[in-house]
Amino acid sequence: MILKNEYPEIRLEAECLVSRTHSDFAAIALPSGSFGKMKWDIVIGSRSDRLERMKIKPGIGLGGMVLRHGMIYMVNHNQHPSMRKECPVMLAEKLESGMAFPLPLLSAESSCGVLLLGRRTDMYMEEDIAGVQLLLAEKLLKSRCFGRYDGTTIQ
Image 1 (tube, rainbow, N blue to C red):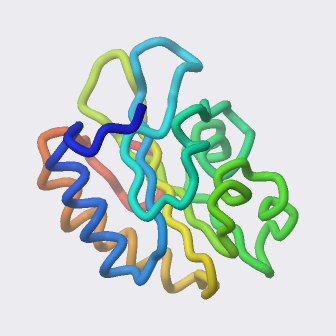
Image 2 (cartoon, rainbow, N blue to C red; image 1 turned 30 degrees about the horizontal axis):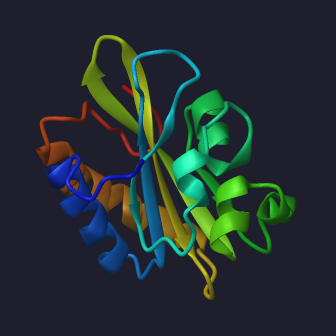
């Protein structure tokens, strides 16, 4: 179940990211400690309750691609367009465009979390990735929950 009071500091930063990136949707997945049990812990702008039941599997959907490759992944009409019809989150939330980023965590048992941003009408462009990278470096790294982030990969 996605609780609004869980992770208040991270939720606040995610709400700021949604606003500053003109996104309609954001979700953050944090590892539960057991491999393969990742789920969306923080969701902002959701129109569907289906995310509560979704698990993130490496290689499936935007979040899964980040888990598998440890790199930023973007989907729009030009980049990976088939993913718009294959990604469970994009389908459930009716997103036209999405970006997912690895979030390094300061936890010995987990390597990374995932941030997913989405828009229902506009398309993300390459320059939006740079903007989010800057915001992540500015905002999320101030949190004690996150490790070092170089903008593309986990450090």
